[in-house]
Length: 126
View (cartoon, one colour):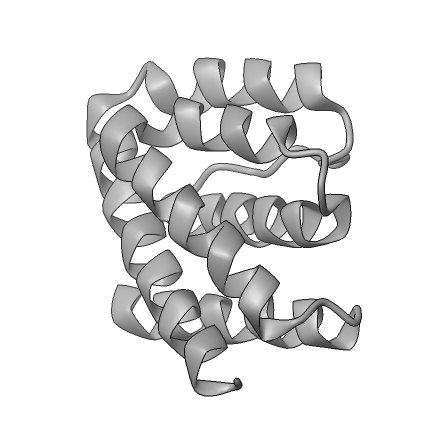
């Protein structure tokens, strides 16, 4: 499995779907930059809580959450069905990611790379 390819592909779809949803590149870049900072400082769980806590642009947040959670399949973990169910997603992350250090570290690295690519892609679309 080529994780570099998966990060680039996911980043592309995050930016593309946000753009199709009418969200400006500047807004997308802003949310992604802040999300990346939270991920680096507070980890996977903090990143997800942060995205759910944003009330300004639920559509871009849901796209980012959905695409990041879909990457769990790369690590052999099925994703939660409904990303709008905040409590269920947080419990899922605790039970299926936070309790496995190897998966947690791999996923954090994968999400970081994805968000870096998405940030650059959104900047390039300005």
